[in-house]
Image (cartoon, rainbow over the protein chains, first blue to last red):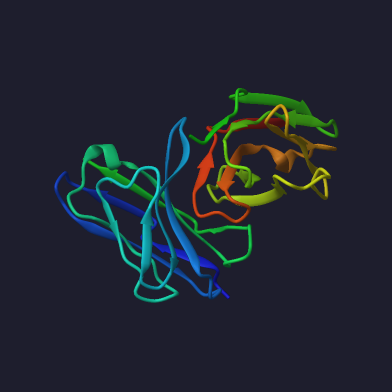
Length: 112
Length: 115
C-alpha cells in the first residue's frame, strides 16, 4: 500500500512549456484533489474530483487542466507554464465519507 | 466567502510545556469541518485532528486537542507536553460541509520547541 504517490519530485520548466504532474493512489478513494503551496500563503485548492469522469474547479484553477479517467489517477496539466506557477504542488485523496485527506509528498516546480 | 486566519507566524515553546496555536475562521455555511495539519521540514502534510461544526465536545487525539468555540469562530490547536519533534509548520483548514469538496487553508504557524 503506497498511499498517494506523485511524480516527478522536482521539475524545471521554461515559460511556455507544457507538462503533466502525475498523482496516483491505491486506496480506492473517490475524492482526489490538487493544491499549490506558495511561501506565506498556505495551500490553495486548484481542482478536485469526486470520482472517475467528474472534476471541478477549486480556488485557483486558471492555467491548469485535470481529468479523471480512472479512480487511481488524477493528473494535473500545465498547458503553457508561467513563472507565476512556480510552486510546490500537492495531491491528496480521501474516501467519500471520510474527512481525513492523505497527501502525496509534493512536486517542486520551477518555471523560468 | 470562506476564510481561515492564523495570526501567529511563529511560536516558541519550551519542551514539555503546552502551547496553543490560534485559528479563526469565517463562513456562513451551517455545516463545515475544521482540521489541523502538521508540515515538518521534510515537506509532507500530516493530518492531526478534525472537528465537525455540530460536534458538541472538543476533539482530542493523543497530545492534540482542538479548542472549538463556535460563537467566536475559533478552532485553536492545543499541544500538550511539547516534544522536539513537534517543531514544524502547522496549518488550520476548513471544509465546506463535514467532508466537503472545497478546502481552505490558513497561512500557517511555525512552531519551534526549545530544549
